[in-house]
Length: 177
Image (cartoon, rainbow, N blue to C red; front, top):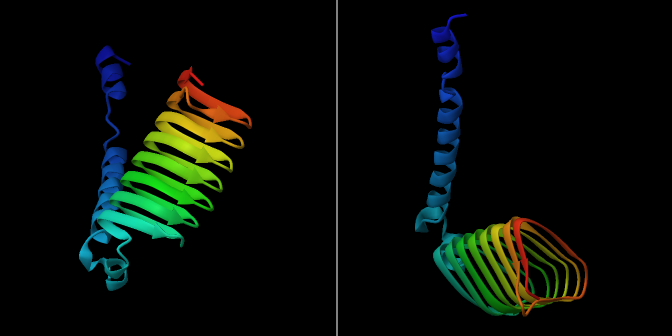
C-alpha cells in the first residue's frame, strides 16, 4: 500500500453517521419546540404548567412542569420539572426531580432529590437522599441522608452539612464544608 493510499484510507470521514446524528438531533429539537407552542393542545395551554416561560406558585399539590424557563415557588407535595432554566425555591413534602441546562434548587425538600444537567446549584435542606449529576455541581445544602454526586466539577460549599455518606466523583473536586 502506497503512502497516498494509506492517507486516503485514514482520512475517510464518517459522514453517514454525522448526517444521521444531525437528523436525529434536529428532529428532537423540532419536537421540543413544537410541543412548547400554544397549539400543542388545549389542556397544556390551560394548565399553565407547560410552555416557554412557566411560573408556578404551589398550593401544596404535586407540580409537574416543563418549559424553556420554569420557576416554582410556594408549597408542593412533589415536584417534577424540566427545562433549559429550572429555578425551584419551595417547600416540598415529597421528592423533587429536576433536569435542565441550569438547575437552581433552594428550599426545604422532605423527600429525595434527583437532579441533573449542565449547572446544578443546591441549597436549603434535603431530608431524603440526594442524587445529582451534571457538568458543574455546587452543593451547599443540609442533607439528612446520603449525597451521591458526579460531574466534571463538584464543589461542596462551606454551608453544606451531610449527615449521611458522601459518594462523589469529579475531575475537579472541592470540599469546603
